[in-house]
Amino acid sequence: MTRAVTLIGSNILTNVAQYAYAATAPADSRLIFLAGSCPLSEDGSTVSVGDYAGQAAKCLENMTIALHEAGASLRDVINTRVLVASSNQTDLVSAWEVVRDAFGADSVPPSTLLGVTVLGYDNQLVEVEAIAAVRD
Image 1 (cartoon, rainbow, N blue to C red):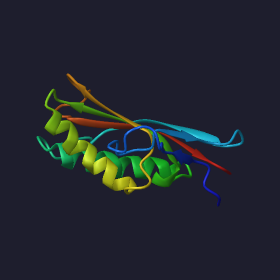
Image 2: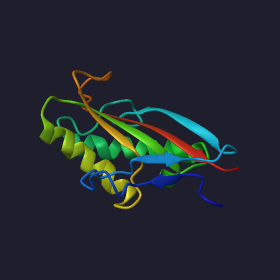
Image 3: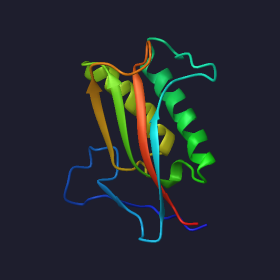
C-alpha cells in the first residue's frame, strides 16, 4: 500500500528540530484521530511510575496497538503531541527521545512537546496524542 503521509522538512529553518516541519496527506486519505495514549497496563494500572522514558515507551506501545486496530502503523502518523507532567526540560527531553526514536531519525512527523501540570491517571507522567492518515 502506498504511504499517504508526506513529511516536509525545510532548507531554511533550523535543522536542530528533530521532526518534520509539516506533513501532508492527499484528499482521498482516511484520517485516524487517536485518543491520548497513556502508560496503562491491561489492568488499568500506570506502569513505570516515576520513569518518563518508561512511560513514553508504554504510551507508544499502546498507540501502536490502537493504530493497528484502525488499520495503520507508526509510519502513517502525520502529527503527534507529547504531554509531559513536569516543568523540568530534562524530563520532557527524556520522554521526547523515546518518541523520536520510535519513528526513526528521518521519519518523525511534526510534533509538539509540552510540559503540563498534571495528567489524568494516578502517577501518570506522559501522554502521547497522534493523528494518522492512510489510503484504503
